Figure 1 (tube, helix red, strand yellow):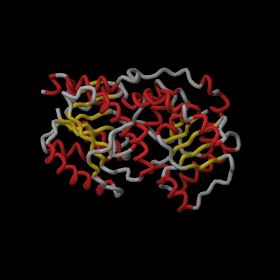
Figure 2 (cartoon, rainbow, N blue to C red):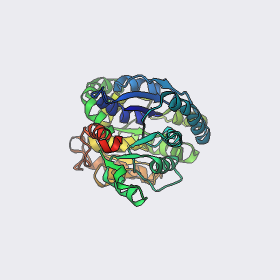
Figure 3 (cartoon, rainbow, N blue to C red):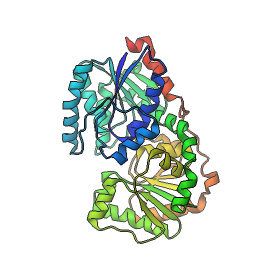
Length: 368
């Protein structure tokens, strides 16, 4: 079976890596190719992840770069079509919900190539989010829908997807976390020394809804600066966020509020594990903090990962200075790192999801 795996942005790497490693255990059954669309084109945001995740270098990089959603999607579709025509895969596997996910699904579907969607069925029910459109379109066209949580199955069935296409495999990103957590812990002493860490809040913000609008970004930074007067704040700044802060002249003054460069997977995982609390707008961080038992506030009005709230450590919070400051300080007063959470881990977030993915792909009814 010839499979083309598609990655476009960092979260895709953590999802595809364990699947490719598991398929490599069956060399007589799978012939794999990795296509990187180049949606994340900064080496800091891509290259280090290939190294740390032990992910093979891409066979092909489409190098689409930045652009509007329409421009980026169009470039991916135009360049990916020739890849399919040249290599004639049996399947493509698309993870997540980025533009690459939808664009490559559209191309493959029109050329009669089967599509497996890894992390299918997640819904925020907010169509103002580009990712929600990507999820909806991909799931309607995909031939195989591999869900990370039971709510994904329910969403797909409600949307009229045939039950035989839906397979609950669990969260493949947790496979990567489980495998690399011991290695990430080896990084902790150096991180602790480099940044003078004891008790700290970890922040990560990059979504357009939080960083593109000036007042919303100012609100977040002012809230974090207030928090820094009570507890150190460590903020690895996404390039998009740093550009916006520079343009708006936003420059925190507190020495206890450290703005640092983006980090690799291992360093960031270690920081999540040792933080008193994480403030984020990232989907993947909601899942990782749930597994780690670290309290998490997500600055969004909704989440496509409700299981991180019902079963995990996540809580949605509004972008309001007073609400942010009070909620974070209250939580810091309540929570100690050594007993951060009594939350349970969602079903099949066990480090074995990739093996279940491969079992599904190997089954005769799927291949046929």
